[in-house]
Each structure stands twice: as C-alpha cells, then as structure tokens.
Image 1 (cartoon, one colour):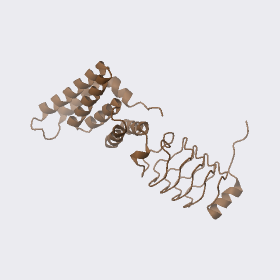
Image 2 (image 1 turned 180 degrees about the vertical axis):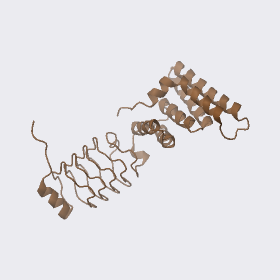
Image 3 (image 1 turned 180 degrees about the horizontal axis):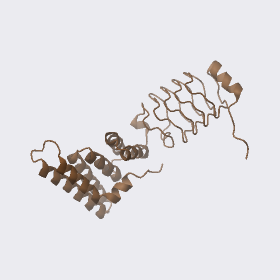
Image 4 (image 1 turned 90 degrees about the vertical axis):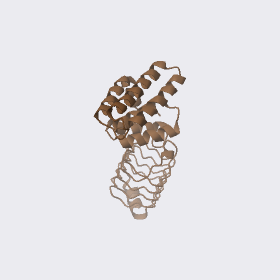
Length: 249
C-alpha cells in the first residue's frame, strides 16, 4: 500500500502566512488553536488534521476533505462547509452559528454538544439519533428537545413519539408522556400493528392512573406516580429498545 499522505510543509507555511491555500495538502497537520479566520481553504485536503480550538470564523472550506479531522471546540461561525466531506469529523463543542452546510452533511460526523446548529439543518434521523444518545446518557430534557424536533420533521414517526414519551416520563411529566404514548398507539394502530398499539395504551393508562392515585388535586407528581411510570415502561421494553437504536442515514 502507498504511504499515508502527510501535510506538505510548503502548503502549511503558505496557509499560515497568507491564510489562502486552495487545494492544499494538509493531511495530519497540527493546527491546534490556529487563527484561520476568513482563510481560503476551498478543496483543501485536511484529512485527520487537528484543528481543535482553531478559529475558523468566516473561513472558506467548501469542497474540503475533512474526513476524521478534529474540529473539537473550534469556532466556525459563518464558515462555508458546503460540499465538504465530514465523514467521522469531530465537531463536538464547536460553534457552528451561521455555518453554511449541505442538507444531511452532519449525518456521518460527531457533532454532539456543538452549538449554533439549526434543527432545519438536520435530518429526521440525525435528530432522532441525537435524542437517543442524550437519553442513553440520562440527559432527558435535551433528549426531549431533539425528539420534539424529529417529530416536527416526521409527525407520523411513531417511534419518536414513544421515545419522547419515555423521556417525559423520566422527568415526571406524566400527562405529557401519556399523551405521547396514546398518539403513538394511534399511529401503530393505523399501520395495523395492534399489539404495539395496545401496549402503548396500557402504558398510558397506568401512568394516568398512578398520577391520580398519588395526587388527586392534580398538582405535582409523587413517588407512586413515578413508580407507575416505571411500571408502565415495562410494557414498552421491546418498543423502547427500538426507539433508542441508531437509525441509518
């Protein structure tokens, strides 16, 4: 096999001196904390480069190859990433406010806890998977937000209604959780999946009943209601497991 391409030292020097290096060979380059604001890196080869904490505001990275590049914590406000390859790219904690992205461009990257990403820039699967990951880590309010955005993209995606219901139940939002389960049940019923529909209806009924038993006044939620919610989730084990599996893109 041919040796792995490395950054061209002349290209690296040119970039740092002029901030303009279209099509440059910068594979594996160490550019941590580099100030590359408004740099022209169109079609640059930046595979596996380390741009962690770099300042790339307003940079031109259209058509660049950023596969497996680290941009963790980078400032990328207004960066042009249209046509860029982002396979395995680490964008965690990066600021992507105003960045220009192709539809679905983030589907193969790691963008968890990045800021400035608009839900309109993400596909249904990206939003649902982000919710599933947040839920698995116990970040239920964040997961609920992602599932809500996924539902806005695909209102008939029953599995996202189930997932959001679970997250709401974990936060003690029993009535909202029951509403989600009931709506998901109607969607499953429309598809002829009666067993799943019945499981969801039973779960919703159990949550509502536990809430009323624990707090007839309807103010707040107590231990019995939470216990009822957890018992209800036992009905949903197979459906819940599916809800938190990654979706393909």
